[in-house]
Length: 439
Image 1 (cartoon, one colour):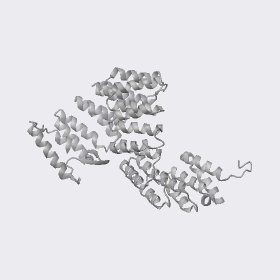
Image 2 (cartoon, one colour):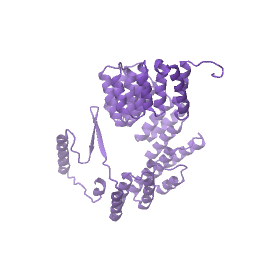
Image 3 (tube, one colour):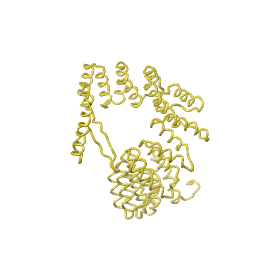
Image 4 (tube, helix red, strand yellow):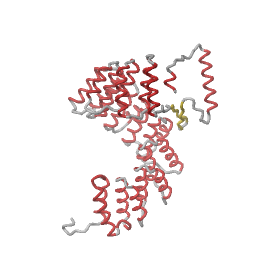
């Protein structure tokens, strides 16, 4: 274009900058050169679309401070510019700065709110995502389908069923109530909250389904213990003309694992490779390892782990280690822990589980040795926590926790329950092993 003597305009630059933004590793040098060209023409400050494209490019290229310099220099800004800057900070985990830009906005829209909610949800800050959603509703801003998907993701990960139900009621009043992606998110949320019948109801009422819809309901049934139903839906999906992908087979293999269907699971694994030409990923191997482990076939599980074409991760090894505890296989547990320590030397759970395995079979010297090793390495056991949702709020507790505002009522109820148990003839079993599990 340049060799032909044709002068570029703002559309040319926006297109090039968008390309650089989508491929930041390849487009960084070209993007800087284009930025220089744009500056000579003054378009970086005077043209809002070009300026916004620059902000997006630098944000996606992990140069968010440069993006902010461009943003501040822009003489004209619109809502897209502000939202792009908020998204840029969220993308680069600069959450406080994202909120600062949000607060400075002269006028916020649904995209501004969604940029924060979606940003928090994508990065695992689910409670913050729901807090901002509540703020959004208080300010009377109507959510769009992107907002709803982000909120349902947060509900699914927190297990906040009451909020999920409220959001579902909200969806039913909206024009996007038949949106496939929204319904897929509802299926996932209900499945992960243990309400598989609600998930089935959403699925059955869908006017149009995608492969993701089928995968969501199959995996939902599988993880909730309805193995036969999951496999029936897996077959029904194919009769409807959908070709199963890797996620579909993960659902089928999970169902077989939870139901102890070893031969059936191996058959699906073979069909996946031979018929559908899908190369097994780590999650598929993990399902087969779990399948063997649950069935007590620890040798077969370990042989598979050693012969996997990729390095096993913590999930795969952890599944087999848990089986070693259940079946008292100390020798295999020791080998697995060596692999786990190599993957994550600072993790406490691997050492604690091995210590508990020693304790479970009465090998107290081995358990003590593991604890001494943890102490020498400066590794401390992280306390596990339980959580419960009440009226849309998630309450978290650790062992012996007395920080909750309603602690007096909680402990009074525990004492009452303990009294009722003792009155019914229950005698608590106290063993030395508890020292290893709770200290």
